[in-house]
Image (cartoon, rainbow, N blue to C red; front, top):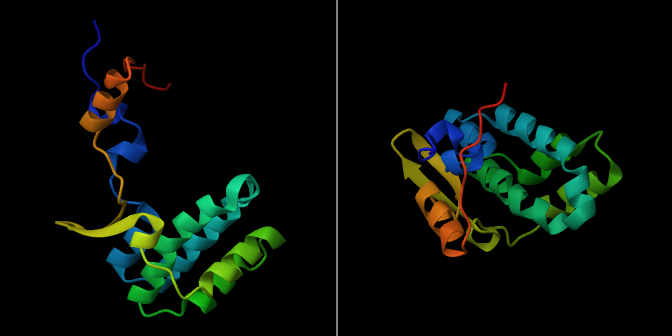
Length: 149
Protein backbone atom coordinates (compact mmCIF):
# COMPACT_ATOMS: atom_id res chain seq x y z
CA UNK A 1 0.00 0.00 0.00
CA UNK A 2 1.50 3.33 -1.06
CA UNK A 3 1.84 6.02 1.53
CA UNK A 4 0.76 9.60 1.04
CA UNK A 5 3.04 11.53 -1.28
CA UNK A 6 6.06 13.21 0.19
CA UNK A 7 6.77 16.81 -0.77
CA UNK A 8 9.21 15.66 -3.49
CA UNK A 9 6.37 13.67 -5.10
CA UNK A 10 4.16 16.73 -5.34
CA UNK A 11 4.25 18.51 -8.70
CA UNK A 12 6.59 21.51 -8.58
CA UNK A 13 3.84 24.04 -9.18
CA UNK A 14 1.99 22.74 -6.12
CA UNK A 15 5.11 22.63 -3.91
CA UNK A 16 6.14 26.18 -4.56
CA UNK A 17 3.50 28.81 -4.11
CA UNK A 18 5.61 31.44 -5.82
CA UNK A 19 6.01 32.00 -9.53
CA UNK A 20 9.76 32.02 -9.24
CA UNK A 21 11.19 34.17 -12.07
CA UNK A 22 9.61 37.51 -11.12
CA UNK A 23 9.62 36.57 -7.43
CA UNK A 24 13.38 36.03 -7.48
CA UNK A 25 13.97 39.24 -9.42
CA UNK A 26 11.85 41.23 -6.97
CA UNK A 27 13.59 39.70 -3.97
CA UNK A 28 17.01 40.49 -5.43
CA UNK A 29 16.01 43.95 -6.63
CA UNK A 30 17.49 43.14 -10.03
CA UNK A 31 16.00 44.65 -13.18
CA UNK A 32 18.64 42.77 -15.17
CA UNK A 33 17.46 39.44 -13.74
CA UNK A 34 13.85 40.38 -14.48
CA UNK A 35 14.68 41.25 -18.10
CA UNK A 36 16.61 38.01 -18.54
CA UNK A 37 13.78 35.91 -17.06
CA UNK A 38 11.16 37.72 -19.14
CA UNK A 39 13.24 37.10 -22.27
CA UNK A 40 13.48 33.42 -21.37
CA UNK A 41 9.73 33.20 -20.85
CA UNK A 42 8.98 35.00 -24.11
CA UNK A 43 11.35 32.64 -25.90
CA UNK A 44 9.19 29.71 -24.78
CA UNK A 45 5.81 31.40 -25.23
CA UNK A 46 5.25 30.79 -28.95
CA UNK A 47 3.07 27.70 -28.65
CA UNK A 48 1.06 29.21 -25.81
CA UNK A 49 0.47 32.34 -27.90
CA UNK A 50 -0.72 30.23 -30.83
CA UNK A 51 -2.99 28.16 -28.57
CA UNK A 52 -4.51 31.04 -26.56
CA UNK A 53 -2.53 34.27 -26.21
CA UNK A 54 -4.62 35.28 -23.18
CA UNK A 55 -2.85 32.62 -21.09
CA UNK A 56 0.42 34.41 -21.81
CA UNK A 57 -1.04 37.73 -20.63
CA UNK A 58 -1.76 36.18 -17.24
CA UNK A 59 1.93 35.33 -16.81
CA UNK A 60 3.12 38.66 -18.21
CA UNK A 61 1.21 40.50 -15.50
CA UNK A 62 3.73 39.33 -12.89
CA UNK A 63 6.68 40.62 -14.93
CA UNK A 64 4.88 43.92 -15.52
CA UNK A 65 4.14 44.37 -11.82
CA UNK A 66 7.70 43.46 -10.88
CA UNK A 67 9.10 45.98 -13.36
CA UNK A 68 6.99 48.74 -11.83
CA UNK A 69 8.00 47.75 -8.28
CA UNK A 70 11.68 47.77 -9.28
CA UNK A 71 11.32 51.22 -10.85
CA UNK A 72 11.83 50.04 -14.42
CA UNK A 73 9.79 51.21 -17.39
CA UNK A 74 7.70 48.18 -18.45
CA UNK A 75 7.61 49.36 -22.07
CA UNK A 76 11.40 49.52 -22.35
CA UNK A 77 11.89 46.29 -20.41
CA UNK A 78 9.36 44.28 -22.43
CA UNK A 79 10.64 45.67 -25.74
CA UNK A 80 14.23 44.70 -24.90
CA UNK A 81 13.20 41.24 -23.65
CA UNK A 82 11.12 40.60 -26.79
CA UNK A 83 13.82 41.68 -29.23
CA UNK A 84 14.71 38.90 -31.64
CA UNK A 85 11.68 36.79 -30.73
CA UNK A 86 9.07 35.72 -33.33
CA UNK A 87 6.76 38.47 -34.58
CA UNK A 88 3.70 37.16 -32.70
CA UNK A 89 5.66 37.10 -29.45
CA UNK A 90 7.01 40.60 -29.99
CA UNK A 91 3.49 41.86 -30.74
CA UNK A 92 2.02 40.36 -27.56
CA UNK A 93 4.86 41.79 -25.43
CA UNK A 94 4.73 45.18 -27.16
CA UNK A 95 0.96 45.52 -26.73
CA UNK A 96 0.85 44.21 -23.16
CA UNK A 97 3.61 46.53 -21.92
CA UNK A 98 1.59 49.54 -23.09
CA UNK A 99 -1.62 48.60 -21.30
CA UNK A 100 -2.85 50.96 -18.59
CA UNK A 101 -5.04 48.43 -16.79
CA UNK A 102 -2.51 45.85 -15.57
CA UNK A 103 -2.99 44.87 -11.95
CA UNK A 104 -2.17 41.60 -10.26
CA UNK A 105 -5.78 41.11 -9.20
CA UNK A 106 -7.09 41.62 -12.74
CA UNK A 107 -4.88 38.76 -13.95
CA UNK A 108 -5.45 36.39 -11.04
CA UNK A 109 -2.33 37.03 -8.93
CA UNK A 110 -1.53 38.24 -5.44
CA UNK A 111 1.75 39.40 -3.98
CA UNK A 112 2.15 37.88 -0.55
CA UNK A 113 4.79 38.47 2.09
CA UNK A 114 6.57 35.33 3.19
CA UNK A 115 9.43 35.09 5.70
CA UNK A 116 11.85 34.75 2.77
CA UNK A 117 10.40 37.78 0.97
CA UNK A 118 7.62 38.76 -1.44
CA UNK A 119 5.98 36.03 -3.51
CA UNK A 120 3.93 36.21 -6.71
CA UNK A 121 1.30 33.52 -6.35
CA UNK A 122 -1.94 32.62 -8.00
CA UNK A 123 -4.97 34.08 -6.30
CA UNK A 124 -6.49 30.62 -6.83
CA UNK A 125 -3.58 28.72 -5.29
CA UNK A 126 -4.50 25.47 -3.60
CA UNK A 127 -2.44 23.36 -1.26
CA UNK A 128 -1.56 19.72 -1.89
CA UNK A 129 -4.17 18.61 0.64
CA UNK A 130 -6.86 20.74 -1.05
CA UNK A 131 -5.86 19.36 -4.46
CA UNK A 132 -6.00 15.77 -3.17
CA UNK A 133 -9.39 16.37 -1.53
CA UNK A 134 -10.83 17.80 -4.76
CA UNK A 135 -9.64 14.78 -6.75
CA UNK A 136 -11.07 12.38 -4.16
CA UNK A 137 -14.37 14.28 -4.09
CA UNK A 138 -14.65 13.63 -7.83
CA UNK A 139 -14.13 9.93 -7.18
CA UNK A 140 -10.49 9.82 -8.21
CA UNK A 141 -7.40 8.77 -6.38
CA UNK A 142 -3.85 9.96 -6.46
CA UNK A 143 -1.27 7.26 -6.83
CA UNK A 144 2.30 7.69 -5.80
CA UNK A 145 4.55 7.54 -8.81
CA UNK A 146 8.06 6.17 -8.92
CA UNK A 147 10.75 8.83 -8.88
CA UNK A 148 12.29 9.55 -12.28
CA UNK A 149 15.56 7.82 -13.10
